[in-house]
Image (cartoon, rainbow, N blue to C red):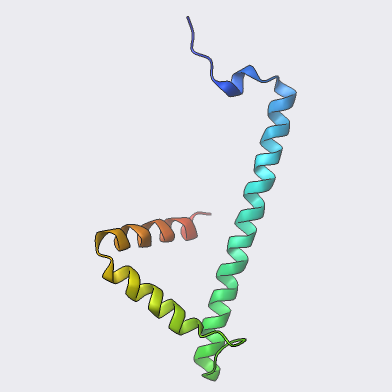
Length: 91
């Protein structure tokens, strides 16, 4: 008796449609995360060059506070940093 997985029970046409839907969702969130990373880096660059807050937000202070809070968390903070780096580096 063979074990069947859920995706093998779907007809081929429905599987292709679901693959397209999940591909679209994945590419959307990938684009949003790339946009946010770009805005973060531009915010840091503008704040370093001009010395003021960008749109009223202290980007460098927020990033520094995040790094400090992760550093004070010990091993859990280290795991969070590793996961964030893997998410950002995944392309």
